[in-house]
Image (tube, rainbow, N blue to C red; front, side, top):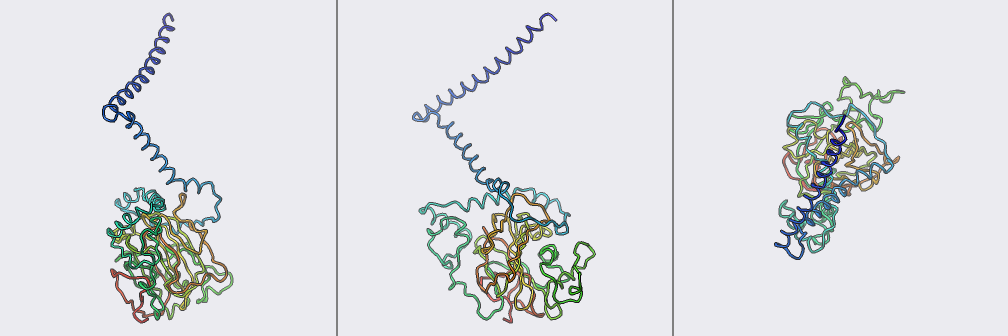
Length: 409
């Protein structure tokens, strides 16, 4: 129709004018900023623009720095393949408060905190930074093997500082000692395959430890040809799992103890007994806080959280020590296990990574350093010992590395 060409030309012209107008507005805005800059800071009129650009670049670099391990993990060949077991997934029944809590970006925050802890501080700043931390969390540097704050290049080195043996002597006569400084959250005996998280809240040993790592040695069923324990049915009695863990369930009892490491505690953990560690099982998972207040309302907290289970044998039979991850814990490290990689970017609930430590395992003696957290968290001990053993301390009591565990020792 007549006039359509002119109308189209007018539309294009209008868009072109709009584009030019937008560019002109940007130019005018920059001119105004420069004029204001000359009045307030004549030497560098573009200081505001440079400052904003610097902040944007710094934010970009920081984001890449924090999430580079995720990218690296996606391209590096995997040396361990996970095992999937849906029966080990935590209970899906959650209260609205727990659902809201789990929506928080706790893993991202923990990864960022872990990366920050690896930054090397200038020597001149170390006394001020670490000194402030010591005041906030009541850290006693007299107990550290290296007392000079300038010696710790990074926060991670400071968190995992070795303790002075004179300040933490390992009890010579006790057969079992506490593996770290901290506070007892719960302790007691396992009953029918369940252990206590907090008062009136329990969780399954089978979910926490996973399938058996060795064939049972004490019962007639385990010795029958072609017999295997089937834990894949909900009707399987958990008490059978507990008995299958043990060397002698008639004379012995399965004990448990949960030790909470606060931010001011030493973040390394040592061997509580003379034993042989035969197996490592890594469960990737959430990084929820293990603070006692959180543990009181998050059901199966220790099953939901990332953890590394070390299991083996000692004088009386089964022994395990589990390092449980938490918010701010960017990494769990086992010194003799170079393949262990915690805080993975990609994981699924109910998966785990198994590693058997050779035919004979790794022998550890009471007080030997085993591993460390990037920051404070929780140690869970589950072990077999003679019936009737009495705990020396009570839940809520503070404990120290090397301190006597049972009253009879």
